[in-house]
Length: 164
Image 1 (tube, rainbow, N blue to C red):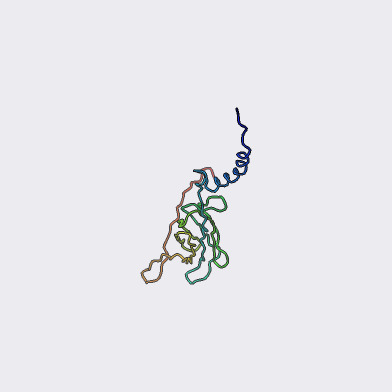
Image 2: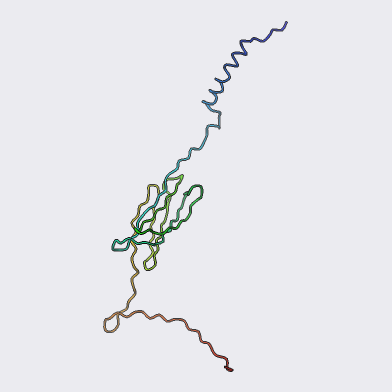
């Protein structure tokens, strides 16, 4: 004699299924809960470029080179170049997944000696960079006065054809 399946077992399974699914989701399946959590940091390097007498230096070229993962949106940044504004200011602002990314800044302006500065960000790098004019090499003459150095230019000798 065969028994008919119990209706109460089926009803219990129908009501218990959502609860079992919820428990599995809360506990998690092995391997499914191992997600990498990424932290973004603000990578910011700012500064002011000035002359030796503290005057702002507009139009100086500032080049940033980074040694680590720094991004502008989704683009990987290795090197960027900006020009200082009327107050001598410059800003590089990006994101990074690491703290303490090493960077080097090179500042150049015609008529001034280039200057390099290094650091790590974050924390944010804020610099005051003073450019100085190159020192002119001078020599003193027999009378003690300044004599400018003499530079000879290369010359090329051409001969004219004889039938001219």
